[in-house]
Length: 256
View 1 (cartoon, rainbow, N blue to C red):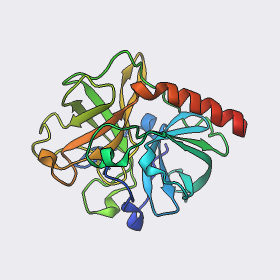
View 2: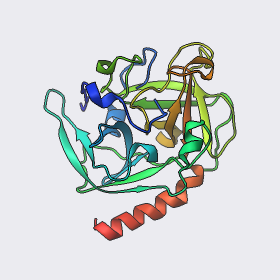
View 3: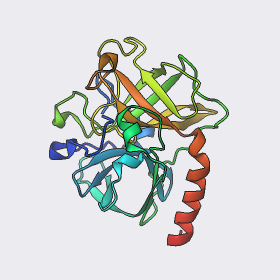
């Protein structure tokens, strides 16, 4: 089983990351999710989560991949030293507005990463969800990320954890706000935290899971600073065309 475990240490502070691992005692993710959700690290000391959507493509948030930095996919077998895999090219959505992101408003926080070499069959790409079913209040989603499980404890991160959250409002084709159904965002509960930026928000689609959105930001209870309150997700419905066109461009310019 692929169960990546890395002590984050100084990589825990992600620059330009208002999104904050899944806090509140979230359990380890399933083996299947561990084949689809990966960790990326950057030369500026960043650490984020990404989703495999094709053997050579990763999906994450744009604010995790800053211009001028170099990024790697972290791959590790249980009990073995992690291997860093090269990322050949990164495309960020041109309409990302950081001021809106920091204000917890909807923006194009989406990026595609083209790997230098395709992943092995050990990895399992996840499809994007159908855009015809926007989130409504109370809908359930699974988020899975490598961030810290306790805010401020960097050594609690680096393990893939998953939590089931519900939509606080909707429908919205640009952004979803997710909360722990037990606390409704008013008390500390499950939610995204440091290094969960880029984590997928998933729901059942046919016989499997599909990516509805990606984690962009998080708050503490009652929208205060911290983690375990509201998890802000950039919904992918309006960005599907950009993702498809960019994927074709990346593959044609760099080869299969």
